[in-house]
Image (cartoon, rainbow, N blue to C red; front, side, top):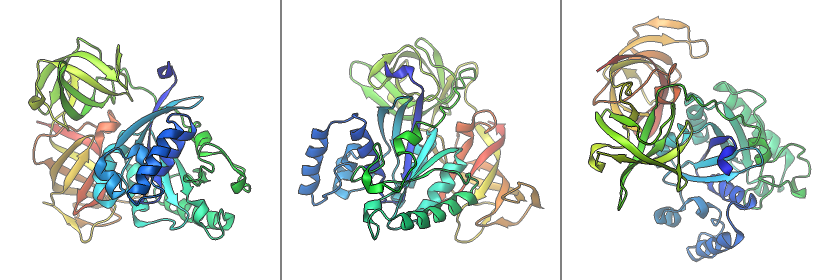
Length: 423
């Protein structure tokens, strides 16, 4: 049974059209997770739509709208096995409009594959994604330098080294190590994704598959209280109300009474399902659906967090956070109210007071009570959500204490929660 192997959630991120979905599709095909006839069917479908070359991407892009636009909109989940681990792949959207879905995907991941095209190199969005995965606490990273077949000349080692230097410089600015693996790949032709080929004969390093098998599975904080942010809630005929989400901490078992906050509703877990199989318990890292007794679909919603009745998730009146401003066209002052994306919640929150400006590299205090902060600044701020919102201390529940701040269609900042005044 696959579940006996260590389980990891891995997110694929990168600029739009750099080949993330194609790389995911290629890896699923070459590891035998999907069959060739399915790719042939998708190839035909892609060609009929005038999207020749998109057949691998179709594996993940199941939504009709995505196929017609050739973009990844929602976060898709697929699982596959390697010799050592079993992975749930989260293919996160690269397109600007869909970055907020990407945040949801990345906040569930234990490791990331950053896909960069060897044709275009580092793009503004590549930078945004790197900042995000770093702030969201993803420390295990591999970079796939894709589309090596499209360099001039094809599979050029010189071009690889040039872009590799660009990427390492970018990774260094946010604190990733200089030995982060960067691997040349052509996802479309299948070079170096799962199998090495003669076309990249100068490359002596691992394939993407070999490299991701080096990732260490995260520790499972089963001793902590249950925390499960709700992603969606379904009503299934003959079953009832089924919330879906990922267990971040603790253990969920059938017959357990749980409380959803901030909805303040209590229900009882009847059964738990993962990958369409009933399981006796859910532990951290498991993406599950569970049938809840005593509640209707209207009682719970995305952004709620489930926890034990005697230790429910924390709802904040205000909280203090350490943030990093990634990009803002002007300045951020007291009273600013952007949208905070924390676990699966999206809540408008007001900067009640900017308390301290910090040195972004050392976190030492540079200025008390500054009037404003701007791009590149780090700060301690007091935040007030405009409606009830669950957030936990990043030191206790890192997955529920990290957030991204979005405004005007961009991620303007990211940060973590340091202290909470409860409601």
